[in-house]
Length: 457
Image (cartoon, rainbow, N blue to C red; front, side, top):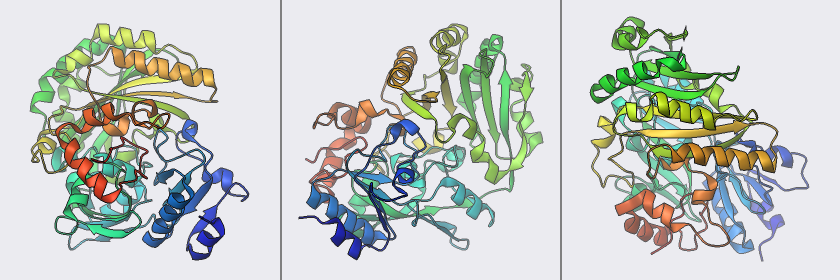
C-alpha cells in the first residue's frame, strides 16, 4: 500500500499536502480557473524524485498531472485529488554551451530564462510568444514562435530529452529513438521531461517589433496588405493580428509586427501596412530578450482563460474582413469578458519543409488561429459564458483541428472515465497508430492522460 510517509523519506524535494502552509500557493496556476485541489504536490528535485512520485501515484491509484510552467488554460497541469509532479520549484535552471550552440533547459523553466541566457552569447532558440510560458508543455506540443520562420518549431530544434516514466531514460536520435520521436509533438503522453537540449542560432541583439493599432474601418486595407504579403513572406518576418475590443469597449485591430533586423529594414518591409495609417504605432527596435514579452498583456497571470484553436484560411482576407470583424465584435460584447481572435502569421515554409514522418506533428498547416477569452472573479455563470463565446467565435472561423496546445479541456481530457479518442486521432492523423505503439511500450497503464490522450495499441 502506498504510504505518503514512505515517499517523504525517500524524496529529495518537497512533498506538499493539504495540511501544509504552502498548499494553497502550490495550486496556483496561470489560468485561475484551471486550479484543482490535488491530494499531493510533489516538488521534484531530479528524475529520481519524478520516478518515486509516479510509483506512489500508481500504487495509490491516483491520477497524475505534470506542472512545468503551469500555463495550461485546459488545466492539464492540475488534477483534482491526484498527484501533481511539479518541476517549477527545483528543476528550472538553464545552461548554455556557446561553443556547441546548445542550451540545456530543465523541465520547469520558463521561456524568459531561455531567452535571457542565450542572448548573452549572441544566440537564441525558437520559443513561445509569451515569455512566462513553461518550456515543457510548449515544447512537447510543437512550439511556435517569432523565430519559427527561420528555424522551424521548438520540436525541430530539440536534440535530446531526459524523461522519467518510472524509469529514467535519455532519448535522442540514437538512444530510445521511438520515445524521442513521440515526445516531439506527442505531448505529455509518455512521461515527464526533466531536461531538454535545444539548438541555438546566431541572433542579433536587437529586432524591430511592437504593437501597431488600427481602427476597425481599416480592416479591408489590412486584409489586402496581408493577401499580398503573406504568400511571399520572408523567414525573418512575422505578424500577429488581434481582433478585439479595447479598454473603452470599442473594436480595434491590434497588430504585432516582427522583423529580425533594424527598424529601417522593418519599416521598409511593412511600409504598405504603415501607410494604411494606424491610430498608434509602438513598433521600434527592442532588445531581443524583450520580444517574447510583447503579448504578455493578453496573457496576464492569475486571470481566468478559455482557449479554442483552429487553422488559418488559405487567404488572410477570408479571416479578416469587414463582415468577419463585425460578426466577431457582435459575439465579443460581454462586459465581463475580454474576447480576442488572434491570427498567427508565422512563416511556415521552414516548418513544413521537415519530413512528414520526422515527428508526430502536421507539416501541412498554413498557420493557426487562437480564440482567447479572459475574465476575472470566476463564477460558474462567467465560465459558462466564456465557453459559449469561444465556441460561437470558433463557429464563424475556418473548420479543422487546430494547434494542440490551444485545445480546451472539454475537447481533450478524459471524461467520466472515458477518453475522447476522436479528437486525439484528428490531431495526430496518420501518426496515431505509431504513437499507440509507443504509448503501449512506455505508458501501458495510461498514467499520463492529461492532454490529447493516446490509447495504447
